[in-house]
Length: 314
Image 1: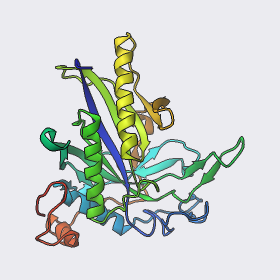
Image 2: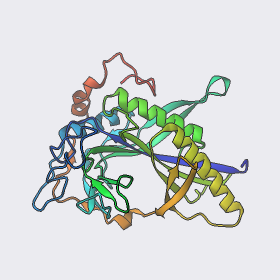
Image 3: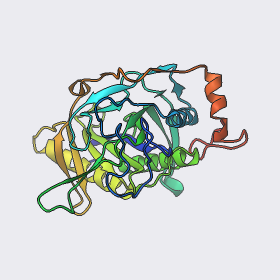
């Protein structure tokens, strides 16, 4: 283990604190009966058109200002084409080349006492997108049910650089981000309800090697304990595979909390596999001015308040 270096990047989906969905007027309230909060737009019925939720955009801008990022002068929605049974349109509206937030960083404390140290994690981007529905397996013998209440729920996907080198750093980052999105009022942070969930991209490489190893993405981790356990298992599994002469295949994996193990779900797609192209039904977002953005989000905090993670005044 001492001759290996761990490389971790995290993609986080934060459900934005809106009362309606990102492209429709359907409710985002949690706990409703299946398929009672899915309107014609969410169901992708013929002839319907998406209408962008203004508050979702304001939440994204608020996050960008909080992390010292650039709020893009122009951002574009794209269609990400892939098939899931709980994605009625056959594509997800997301952002690819021109996201609403670019760059930024989060400063966090790792460890306690004499072993504590400060860590800066750079952020690549944060972009707006819609959630898919949910497949239900447990209540149907030999069948699966589909609940489309979550379809169209507004998400901010926050992507870090691969700056973390241990599961402890990954957990500290996730906790800092979790505190931040709640503090600025853009997400309730309820991990049990799926409002805040993480995907961890994990790879290993020999110490001193500049080139990254092949990564595997652990999907949908909804607790800090599971995040740590999943990364620790995955790191040891990858090291064992390499030391036994096998190659790591890029893949998407799931973590089983009962066994404490990760298991492969599918080979990992690259961006070109999704056939991104600009959504013709949605106009680009154009920023009026930086001063206008900051003034609009001035309610985030008073002039004398400080961010709990960076401890810098905004």
